[in-house]
Length: 204
Image (tube, rainbow, N blue to C red):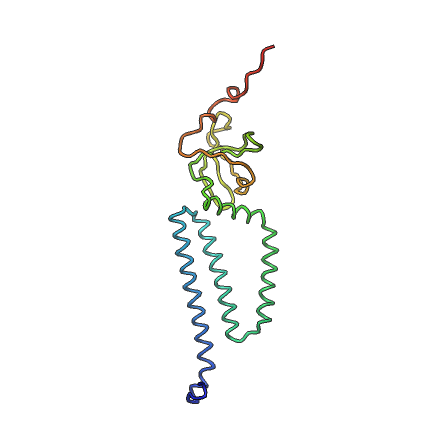
């Protein structure tokens, strides 16, 4: 069919077709980024996704989409597949090293996503992290949740001062048993003094 076209059109096809494919790839990448942004905005409005997390998700998705678009564009422009694969494996190796180097930070970020998606607790809830069985551990009112820490306002007679807060790594909530109270009422057991909670000793 190409031979049936005029000579001047056949000469331009070798330029027009790759350029058209590149334009389609770029357009598809732009539309995909817009779709991801709208999806993240919807998650923020319906699921209470924090602004910091939404920003990170937008940047990560934009980077991945842009990287894929660059690879496709280079492939349509005739760059060797071996060169692309070598570059990809090099970036993957660097990314793997960075991933393991920042594992603790990334695990907290992933756990922050799980906290919001599974609704483990919300702002203004009262939570208590149990160490072993029923042994009480960290406890307080949730006043902030970010990518790394969840901030608990200490409550009860054992709180050191009214402005004291605990910054608990998000991963800890998935390594311990968590007891949660909904609403804004302080659990009564937190307001009791340690002496009142202690079991009465037998008289000798």
